[in-house]
Image (cartoon, rainbow, N blue to C red; front, side, top):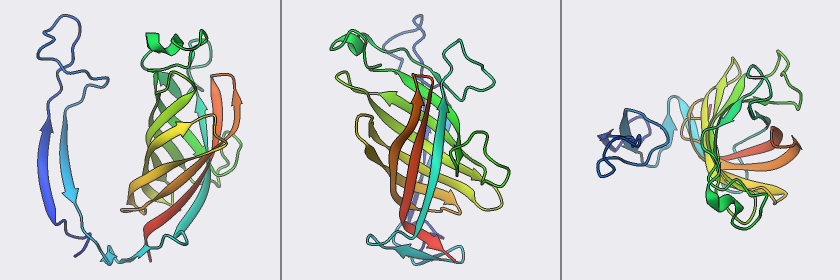
Length: 222
């Protein structure tokens, strides 16, 4: 079997009816993003060779490692829109202050298109690989600060092209947190592994920088 040819394919259509307070609640579905999408679901099987590369799987030693820094600059209506890279698309719910008067942002969702750098500085040097983190995080705990990530790391340079797709819980009180690398495209075709997050610095609620150590345990190599 090979990743060159899928062992099963199907096309599904997603129908989204957004409730806007004027239409019928019985026909509406709760949605934060309106999109017309066609999903192509490809169930792939174990492979040995694809696209002229060799498939490597080892859970003892990663087949690829990298360290990137994730910079999030949240727009709060007082800072510069030119420099901001993320914005809240929902407000915290009433449950956010159920435990603490200050609240833990429970229910707040933030969409981001953040720069990711090989060094800590912004803007990155011209020699660095062009990388961006694109996706969302939301706060999902009312007793403490806790986030959940779902995003793609997008590479667009001569060094790398393609994406890595990540998702998982980010318990902010922990020194290090692991989230899953669930797939990839391009140079990272079908890659899987773990990304370890560490808060490197933060400035209030408008800026934070994460150190992200990525280890891939399933990948294709030349």
